[in-house]
Amino acid sequence: MLALVNKALDASRENRNKILRDIMTLSNVIPVARRLPDEVLLRIFEDTVETEEYERRALALEWRSYSLGRAPLVICGVCRRWRCIALGTPSLFKYVNIVSASGNEVRPSAALDWWLEHNKRKTMQLSIDGWKVQHNFPLPVELTTDNIHTRLILPRIEVSCIPIPTLGTNIWSDSYPLAKELVLISDGIDGLPAYFDPLAMEAEKVTVSGIRVWWTETTWLSLTELRVIGLPSSRLRSLRAMDIREIIIMAPNLHLLDIMWDESRSHSGESEPSTTISAHENLQTLICSFASITSYLTPLQGSIMCPSFQHLSLKTLPFIQPAELSGWLAFFNALSPFPLRSIELPPIRQDNVNPLIVLFKPLSLLEHLTLKGPAVCELIQRLVVGDDEKVTPFILPSLKSLDIYDSDITDEVLLLFVESRNLKNRPGLARIVDIQLWECPFIGYAKWEEILYIIHS
Image 1 (cartoon, rainbow, N blue to C red):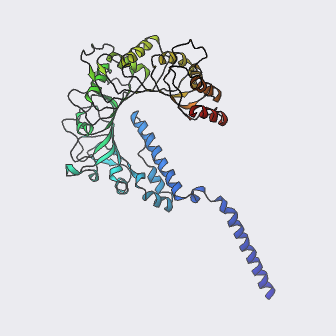
Image 2 (cartoon, rainbow, N blue to C red):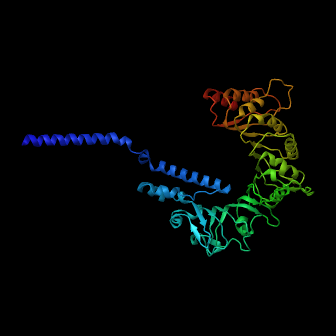
């Protein structure tokens, strides 16, 4: 009998040991997410929310449907640990999306009350899809106030799907929040809707998409950044150069102007430029396509001057025609008393290299250049200063710094470029003092160290 008991105990111990061995073996199969620290999980959650919001905004500007920010809800539904992390992080709930229904009510996004409960009002960024002025309460009560002195000032408010018919004589209510950044999206409105004037007048940054902007009496003192996005639409009248002039004049504190309009629909019959020369003291940065230089900016020469203008960012750089080159030269000849210091170029193709060399010739005081694309290596080769001292003038003689992204640039070409500008001590030729590289796979470590040594010596 005792032998049977001992045999049963041995079998039980063996089974126990087998289970323990299986547990140790399977412990390596536990999902990685369960072994990550809370800080790492939180960073993943934040990146997920930011990515979803970035995609939503891009689709909204293109007048396309988009999701309503469901990432935090999905995260909270995975497990108790993830839910606790998410609910303890108000920044995950800062993007609040509201959808208007067809009637007189508002259909809030999923769990809006819960959403508003877990975010911080001062950091909340609000988007409203399908604005209906006839709604009795277009915004949740939590976002309104009875006292104008305690009204919310949010980082960002976006209103999309603004209807084409007039919004009536009503204006943005004093009980509604204001915003530092305003985004208005429609598929064809001629002029900024007066309904949003109180909101727009207080914004520092304004983006309008599918809205042909024009001002007549309004002066935007708080506006520092304006982005005008013109979607191809038969409802929109063509944009004129004088409209751009009016925008610049009516926003005296404007620092950045971003124009993305369909130049093929620009106004062909421009009126004569104003004989009065206006000066805009604060405009520093212009972002536009290359064709906009001829369509909108060249006609303004002689009617407006921007002494603080220093940076130009080109969104597109097609194969440049001679007519466009003349517009470019006229533009920079007029700017010569206030020289351009920095240019950012779009991805450069091989057929852009020769025209770019021509474009660079009038930019004798340019100090900074941002390049990207498959033909950067060829362009840099063309900027190498040769040994012939009789070859003058140099191309971009004041160039001091380069930012290069996603390029085919090789370490041999970059080294040759730096040596030609830093070691020859040519009169009138500036030294390269800084180069920043991102996603440039053909730069070797050894040559890069040599390039840095030459730059810093």
